[in-house]
Length: 182
Picture 1 (spheres, rainbow, N blue to C red):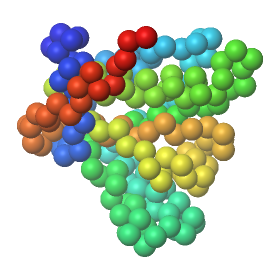
Picture 2 (cartoon, rainbow, N blue to C red):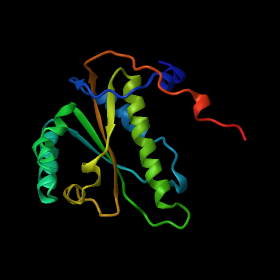
Picture 3 (cartoon, rainbow, N blue to C red):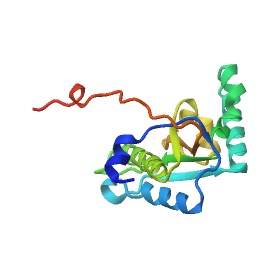
């Protein structure tokens, strides 16, 4: 798959199954994450690779957070099963570093670029994924249980695996609706 085809055909797939990335594919995904824009060379990203028993552990972390933070019962009930939606997850974190020239938002944007690059690398290798955020990306309890500081951002959970349904999603947006010449 060439770069233009990748950029124009990439899509998110939430119906994922085994196999997940193998060691060689994961290495490519990891290398892609580290090739993103990085103002100041801060390397404002950290990643947790979650697979096998780690998915169960993450489900326990989600469940404990939902209970501690008194979430709705439906969130508590689903928490343990959420990491089971794919064979592998990568949790992307932007650990905030005070810097005179690189504001917090640029550090988070760099980490977000890493998630997109990882998803692209997975897609280019015949895998697929979906980038999720939501309550568990904002939870103080989840951050604490992962050993993060309160100011650190969980940029997202990238679920990776093999798509179970091969369907091309329709083109939803047209450039002329979003681009204006000055």
